[in-house]
Amino acid sequence: MANHKSALKRARQNEKRRFRNRALRGTARTEIKKLIKAIEGGEAVADRLPALMSIVDGAATKGVIPRGRASRLISRISRRISAI
Image (cartoon, rainbow, N blue to C red):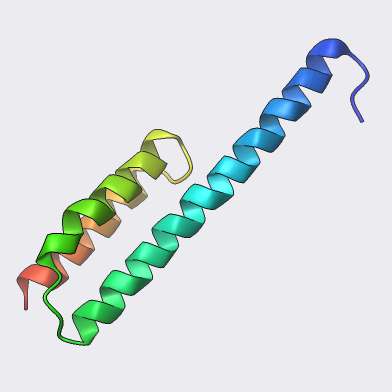
């Protein structure tokens, strides 16, 4: 465990970030899976895309997932929706 005051603070910050990152990453994964399942099920999902884009972009902004991966995910799902 850290001994210096600044190292203790850094450890607290890292733990908070880790919990936030896990929550954001988990939410993004869940929403992506739900949307893909809905697409495969033949549901109308065009109205759910903006919500997913917001979640994925938010995760990318916070650095939870890389910006390129977020862009690629949104692009792939958009193409699947427009192919319907």
